[in-house]
Amino acid sequence: MSDTGGYSTPAFRKVEEVFRKQLDKAPGGGAACVYFRGEPVVDVWGGVKNEGGDPWAEDTLSVSFSTTKGVTSTLLHQLVEEGKLDYDDPVSKHWPEFAANGKEAITIRDILTHRAGLFGIRDLGLTAADITDWNKVTSALAAAPPNLDYQPHSVYHALTFGWLIGELINRASGEFISDRVRTALAEPLDLDGCFIGVPDSEHHRMAELLIGRDPEAPRSPDTARKRRKRTMRRALNKSWAGLGQLGMVPDFSAFLESVTIEDFQPRLLNRPDYLRAAIPAVNGVFTARSLARLYGAMARGGELDGVRIFQPETVGAISEQQVFALDRSLYAPMRWRLGFHQPFVLRRRRPRKAFGHFGFGGSGAWADPARKLSVAITVNAGTGTPWGDMRILRLGAAALSCAEKA
Image 1 (cartoon, rainbow, N blue to C red):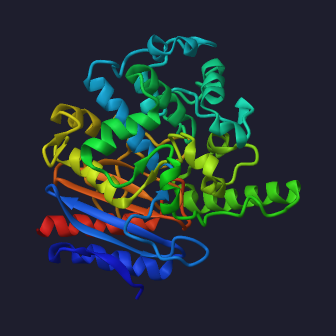
Image 2 (spheres, rainbow, N blue to C red):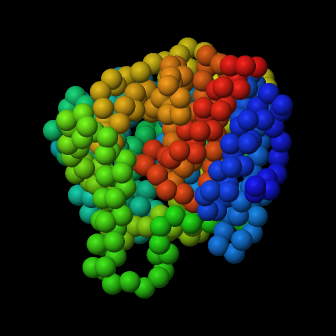
């Protein structure tokens, strides 16, 4: 079995065992952390953080894809609690340019529940280089018409969610989102690694993403495009094969519209310019310890170690399910909350009031207020669905089992 650093308490030793087994089966490395009743009960790491084989360290940071959306949403909920925003405000109340092209009635709640009709990024004409330019992307979104063909269903805003919610955060708080993460979350909770836009001084702690191809490797455009389409199609077919047994034929077009950016490859997020940029749906950089601690506060009604980031009423609002049908991009029962989904776990019953967000490649974090439990995992390699893979499902199931016996 692979060596790991860290510890677990006797009552949660099973979680560490699950994590160790995962390291033997998956490439790269990772970290996992669990908080229970306000205390860290699992904090482990292992594997390698780059192609050179350097070991994953206690303070290793990792790009965590859509796990970022949970942190971005947390910042917005704080501003609602402060009275600077309301879930049912028209977005244009705070962002006047957003009203263009028939979007004046779209609310903040619509964005948080992926029902704003702005999931498509392919038609915005943005390239991979453009997504590091905040003003260019948000101006394109403000000018774009909504696609309301799927109403009243949710359609996962895989990339656009971050800029839409992020611009609201910027305008309501008076701080850019990278700074807001630091002042509202990282500093008050003493998080050891929580960034949306990583300062140069922390780049040496980064794990190297090992997902996808090297963007610097030469390949003809036609071959690269065909390879991307084949890879995407295989992943979608594998993820949604069971729907055919239910008499449903998924339409992949909305998902492809939501994730297609010219020349973008996941490993671009390893580059310093992409690490510095704020892309608040996908390029959040975290330690598992920071994610578990943040969600550990939410699992305790918004407070941890004397620091309160929410009132209990806000946690209650976040826990309430908003969408009850299959998402029309992911074709999965996401059970959307306000900016979060109900976590998937490898057991018959999900934790009913739990909420969190998983990410492509395998990362994820969630809170269960009913058990005062939080679970987080960060990785730098893996395969799976757009909302994670089996690692966090198994890890979450083990954590729930341990919590119920404690």
